[in-house]
Length: 404
Image 1 (spheres, rainbow, N blue to C red):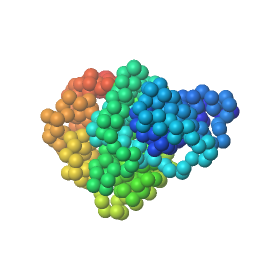
Image 2: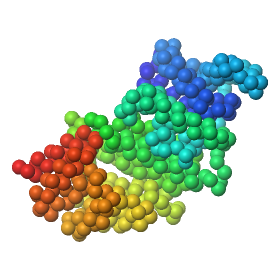
Image 3: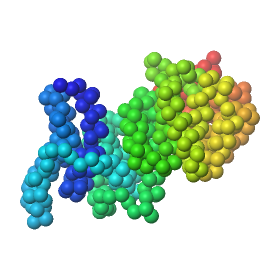
Image 4: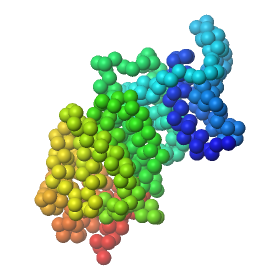
């Protein structure tokens, strides 16, 4: 017998390999993904009781292939499908090919035609091995709503009618950016959830790290792939210090840094160092470099804020993202004082004025500048627009603290 948690971990590792094998044999991403999902559900029910098969990947492929054949028969298919049934009936029971199709599947699930709200759930289901119910719970939506979202995403993949292969070299860099963007959003949602009572969803961020590691194994020489993985590890290393025992938020400068995961920090620093040495610097590498500066400071006072400000300036120039300017304003305030940070914030007020983080940063800088009444107002505005209840509680508490 195996524990349910051990079974779930194994199935998440095997899910993309099983899907790749079934896709190669039968084609049709949507049907193959459904068949593999059914096989995973059967496995999660049977393996903890009866034990893991000697060849678990072969078992999943066999069960999923049978589901595909049953579907073909139920559809009373054309001769092409009948031929596939005959071919599929000879499904091998022995060892399966050692091909790892995870990268190809990532390219399919993160197709540029899919929005992040569609690509992330599809990736979690097809490659992460999560059920629709688990994904719906992660995003706080009804299971039926998530099922429709995934179904529409698979329809778009089918309509794209791409071969099951790596995209051509001319298209690969664009597709890699899509994959990295989806993984970054997945990790960010897990590290600070956009809604709900809990500050984090470690299952989402951990899954994003696992998938980023899989992509990195396939593309070890791509510096932005390495940079994103480094960013995730360096950020996740601070997770133990981000909350109190009751789950309430602890801001970065007040965290107990002895609780940070130094092993993850070491791994992340090594990764970003190797990436930067290739001199093809992208936005994920710059973000990872910023995280490394924070993580390597054993005390808040040891933080090299000048280096962080410089890195944010490069990132701002590269992306033009107002959120980068928002973060840079904090570094500027640490180097040149809160008034300088507030002046920088004024430049993004028209683009971020409704975002709770804009008001939160402004409140912090106003408080540092001694403008308590204005800071209270900004904290209250931030709390009103924050959708994560832990963040909202922290912002409300800060406003109350300043008012006393």
